[in-house]
Length: 109
Length: 338
Image 1: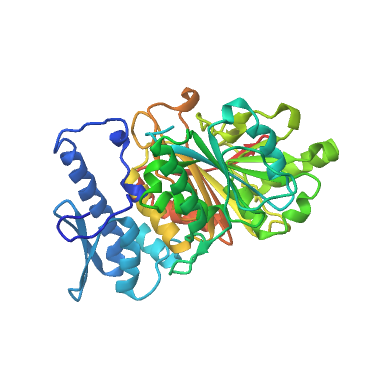
Image 2: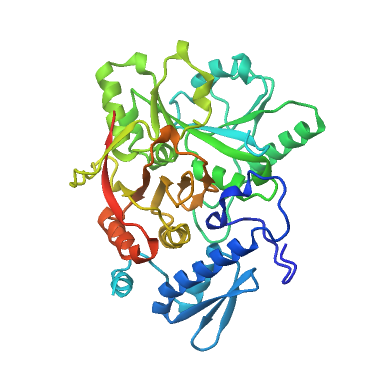
């Protein structure tokens, strides 16, 4: 459960799995926060490289959510990559496709 | 058991391909005494086991319309009941075997176990075993259900080999390899069956393959029988950026989830060991981060089995995303030992 927005999170998206999570039974509070934050910011940077081609922008919010914005100022809160792609599609009003030659050409340049 | 979760083995295969015949002798072995069995239909040959349960297939169609993201309510109920008994101490339970019907799609079963809020913390899918009837394989491969079952499999067992010739068995092996390069293929000999057949292999190394990176011509695994099912494999020579790879693959699966039938790989992400990826359609098992490379061989690779997507297009896409990935993908040929 997200204590800020009350969203019930039953699933950890597979892209969020980290290496030593399962091996240790105890962790010190805040122990991995630095690394986690770095990873999240890194992911946001990569995603922005990609979704800027659609005129969208993503930002990290409080270490717990991501904010997806379009150029008209519309904002959607997303929790993970599983929720991001449907949100992007909804904002664009058209389906996404990583195999789309036009997108690939833009990325390559 | 992994993190105190109970392993599940799914046994699937087309009607009359010998699922029950395969299971019956295995269940009589002493190691299987604490294994519960859930069957969806009773065949002619009855299974005899004290932890046997029968459940009529019940699929709950979820909104969204995707075929693989359906919940199998019958299995959810049975697994929860077993778990309940286990936790009350009424039964011992160290494995659950689910025998599906001949027409079942294994993807919704995986989806049910991986997404149910309770079950995902108590069970995991250890292994999917698909039986293929050596005598009628060609006929069965014309059915989309059978193809899906074989593609989802971790292990393919060729049954009824004694009813046909060696050549026929070899031919069936070759046919399976054409569209399923990742599974291990076994030929069942009933007197020599080992219960390990139902266990997911621990090493998970693709020891049945030899990879050649020199040969650049890609053999299209295409034949009229399997229609447009093709596979593509990549090798990576530098460590991958896991975040970037996750972005690419999650986007691909979101957009083309129904056409990507299978994802399997072992990726070097700059850690001590590899990340093991395994997925059926857009249902991805939680990736496992290993501490070591199986057999000490460092080989970062990735296989996709697809329907109606040209391998070249995927290759192109991966190349364009390379500026993110931090590693160059090199397409490789799988030389599969048949």
